[in-house]
Length: 69
Image 1: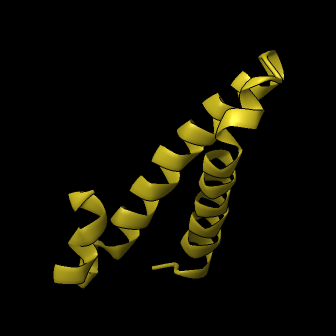
Image 2: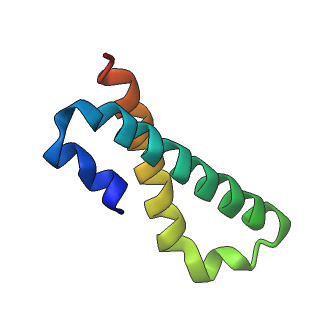
Image 3: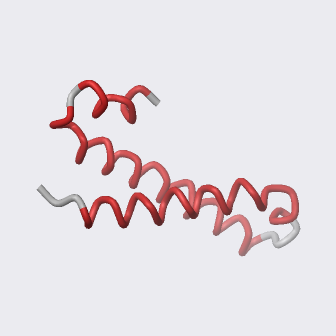
């Protein structure tokens, strides 16, 4: 979490923070999606969490490509 707050104090670390967010949420989305494919019953209990992870992942992808340095 502190890595994501680093750009607030040091703006030059914005891209590194975005890339870290992208990598972390890509892993979360990949494993959560795989668990839904393997066991569809898991989706009912963690649907809102999965949707939130997808939203954060997609926003971080957009931000990484919009903010090029």
